[in-house]
Length: 203
Image 1 (spheres, helix red, strand yellow):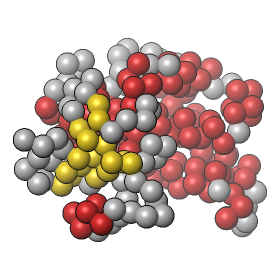
Image 2 (image 1 turned 90 degrees about the vertical axis):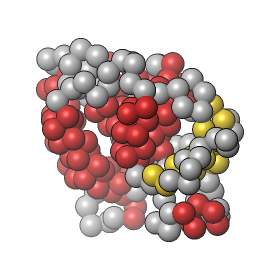
Image 3 (image 1 turned 60 degrees about the horizontal axis):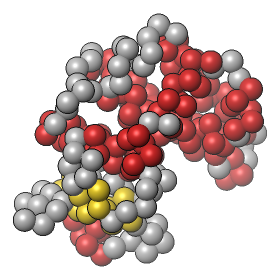
């Protein structure tokens, strides 16, 4: 039986969290790296929305939302209980990340495209979410407890992207717990594995 196909873009935070969940679950996939300027015809055929990730299972089933890919992977194998948290709380945090935070992050990262406000204004909007995360991490090592969960992995790629916009500024902030959490995930084996350029992986 052929491997599932994962259409991905290495630096996309949505694709990143999907790859991390698949890798963690030990699911071998064929990775097809997508050029955003030349999207594969097969990907567009199975998922006309044209964004990554898109997972095509061996039976032809298509999963083309990153959180759905994560949940599918974790339903196959969740050895460290990433789903063993308050899922309503996890989904609330992820929804805020994917909603208002991501919108402000895009404006902060690409401020030249949004001249209505200076970049610092968009950054301040992002900080409302960072303050919330710092508060969570002041109580526990990870966002929803003392072990990694689906919430951490779903949100981490976006905080990584935020920090990278202006590393010097981020390093100078008082988000002490958030910076520790971010660095822990950046240095994790699972993140390093999924960032290797490869056509297949099985972890």
